[in-house]
Structure formats: structure tokens, C-alpha cells
Amino acid sequence: MIPAGAIDCDLHPAVPNTRALLPYLDLYWREHVLRRGMERDNLEASAFPPAAPINARPDWQPETGLPGSSLPEMQAHLLNRLRPRAAICNVIHGAQMMMSEDLSAALCRAINNWLVAEWLDREPRLRASIVVPVHSPELAAEEIERRATDPRFIQVLLLAMTEMPLGRRMMWPVYRAAEKHGLPIGIHAGSSFRHPPSAGGWGSFYLEDYVSYAQGFAAALNSLLAEGVFQKFPDLRVVLIESGVTWLPASMWRINKTWRGVRAEVPWLDRLPSDILRERVRLTAQPFDAPPDAAALATLLEQLGSDDMLLFATDYPHWHYDGDEALPPGLPAALMQKILVDNPLATYPRLAMAATPMQEAHR
Amino acid sequence: MARHVVAAVGEIPPGGRKLVTIRGREIGVFNLDGEFYALVNRCPHQGAALCTGVVVSRLEASLPGEYRLSQPGTMLRCPWHCWEFDIRTGQSWCDPNDIKARTYAVTVEPGEALAKGPFAAETVGVAVEHDYVVLTL
Ligand code: FES
Image 1 (cartoon, rainbow over the protein chains, first blue to last red):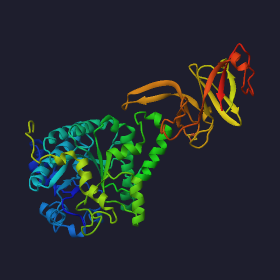
Image 2: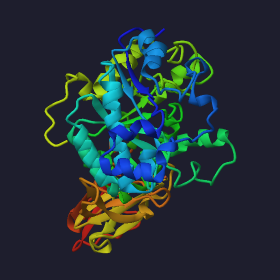
Image 3: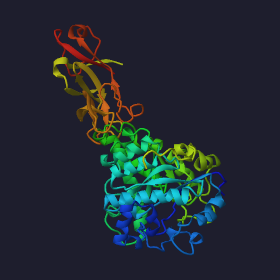
Image 4: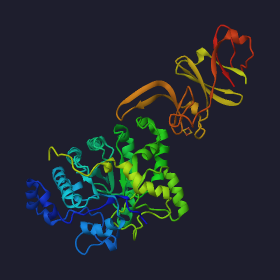
């Protein structure tokens, strides 16, 4: 049972439909959307078929509309049951990955406005990640600057698989802005589908597609490491959201081993990659992809090599577990306390700030 | 412990090396700008002939894109998996405290002093007018 007062690091409010964003769009873009009839489309980032089991737990399935689209339901299903002290909203939406950079930025901005008005202002426990146009780093950085005045925005949201590897210098404006404002970079499972989720090409089935996502996360970390993002931005933290956990130790061994031989190619990488990852990367613990028994879980935690890395998350309304058992059974009590409260507080410095927006100079 | 004359100084120019076998042990003797160093010819990783590897600089960068070539000619790159070792200390670049190649003490001594002995000169004949590299093992 999850004790009250935990910090839930991953919930998914859903934009019910594009029409709901119209009041939050700038006038130009409102007319643009209406002219093109885009309000009839819901622009959902649908990596999976609508009825795929991961999309919503059966008991969290609303009678109408998209799972996660209603605040009262989120409160009834989750917030009033688990009674977290804070819960972080991560909106995954087609806006993040559109081809047109300006339209992408306009819709992301509307989503952030919508998040403030319909979620953050109505439920004091909620916090949110800033939704940004992931393929337009300059505009993404502008959106980060715009939202940074509101302390309820505590992270910047990216996807694991985008147009180019996440460590590339082109992305650095995003990291510079995030670091400046104490915002971790949350890398959420997902792809903008410029490339297949598997490096081997397009799969035929949901099964292979979904399982391949872990490779996308490994590639994202490899890129951030190799490109020197952790050296360039010494205060930047990265949170892998919905990445699964148990693939990571093997990936660390592999990069450590290879680094010893080719480190001269990336001379800024001046210590074991796994040491850097343990210091700077965090993972939400849902899904966990837990091994089958407690002994194997203990081994895995030892291999992970740090008590600081895991963050509690329900991943509401996605379906990874039943009842209120949002963490894998068999975690030691001291580690539970860290996962539920201490690690999230250490990861998200803005959680400690008062939830009142600062004077906004340039909206 | 015995002292072994392993080379005449002129035999190993700066940047050069000589492989010798002392008491059955293969050892590489290196000249770094006039200073001599000796390392076992066996990589602590998986046993490659370390001292046959390429001599390289210490490549460093404090930040991505800021490249520095420091201490040219001081690192030995293993021919098998390219781990780098400091010729002067045997320390690996990647794990200097735990992964090291064995080193041996080397001195340069005048032939005149050596002529008095005691030392072992298995392969090198000593002439009083030259200087020699002497390794203690
Ligand atoms: S044997 Fe030398 S690096 Fe592997």
C-alpha cells in the first residue's frame, strides 16, 4: 500500500479534443485551426490502437471521452485514494511532434495554458511538465522561458525518440533553458515516428513496437552521454519516464566496457559513464518490468547501484498494475521512503517552491 | 633483485622503445624525451602485448568540442582493445587506481660505473665511454 504524502511523478491528463484547446490558442492560430478543420481531429499522439490495454486501466476507463481527460475522475481514481502530496502531469500530444514548427509551438503553448487553467488552478496538488515543440529547440526554449515564472511547472517534457538523437548540439537551447530554471528534462516513452521505434525497421505488431521502446531510451542516454550534455550542463538532470527500469544495468555495463576502448573519441567523457548516469539520471518506477522473484529484484537493485535513481509514479491512467499497488512488491522499506518522497524532492527542486506564480512580465 | 643493463642510451631515441626479456619476462623500455621508463609487455586487461601498441598523447577536453592535446607521447594504447596506459606510471586512463600495468624502475648509468658491477648484462655489452639504461628486477 502506498502511504499518503508520496510524490507521484507521472500522470497523464488527456486533452479531450482539439476543440478544447481553442480558447487557449492565440487568435491567429485559433483561426488557422478552424480554417483547416483541425478542431475536428483530436491530434492525439496515438502510438497504440485506441483499445490497447496500456492506454487505460479498465476501472479508470471513463464513460465518455479519453481516459485521463477529466479532473474529477483523476481525483476519484487516484488523488483522493493515494493522497499524494504532489502529482506531476505529463501531457503527451500530437502537438509536440508536428512537422510545422510554428503550429507545433502554438499548440504546445495552448496545451500549457490549458494545463494551468483546467488542472493546476483547480487542483493544488498538481504540478506539470512544460510541453514543448520537440523538433524546434529555439521555440521550445522560448516556451520554457515563458513558463518558468510559474513554479508549478517543474520539468520540461521530451520524447525518447525524435528526429535526431537527443544529445545533439541542436537540442542544447532546450537544455540551457531547463538548467537555468532548475527544470529537469523528462524524457517520456514515445516517438515522433520520424523513424521506426526499432532500429531494425518498422515492426508488424504492438508487442515488438512497445518492447522496442527500451532501446529508444538506451539510445537517448547514449547520445546525451557521448555528446557531453552532462558536462556542458552540469546542473541538468534527466528523468526517464515510463522507460521501464530493468534494462538499464546491462546497458550501463555495455557502455562502460566500450568507453574504455574508445574514450579518446569523446574525451570530455572523463569518468565511467555509469557513474555519470547514477548521478544525473532518474527513472520513474512504473512500469518497472520487474523480475519474477524477490531475490532477482534485490540483485537488480544492487546492479542499478544507487538508491537515488527511482521515482514513484502511478502512470495514471495507463494500465501497468491493479489496485493501489503502484510499486513492485518486495522493495526494502528504506528504499520505499526514498522512492516515494526523498528522491522526487531531490530531483525536482521546484517542488519545494511555493505554488504561486511569480509576477509574469511578458506573457 | 638484480640490476640489468637493458640498452645503451643511444639505442632508444626519444619516442622510441626497445623490447627486452629479463628473467623470462618481456618488458618494454621507453624513452620519453630523455627519461626512460619500463612496463611489462602484458596488458592487465586480457594479456595483449601492450608494449607493441601505438604511443599516443593524452587527449582531454573539459567540455564537448573543446579539445586539448596534452602530454604528447606519454600514453600507450593497447593493440587489442585500445585501453590507454600512462607509460610513466602504468596507470590506465579509464581506471587509474584499479587497472595498472606493472612498471619497473629504470636508471641511466655511465658505463664506467657499471664496469665495477655487480650487474647482469645478458645482451648488452658495456663500454666505459657510453651511458646505459639499467633496470632493476
Ligand atoms: S588486452 Fe589490452 S585492452 Fe584488452
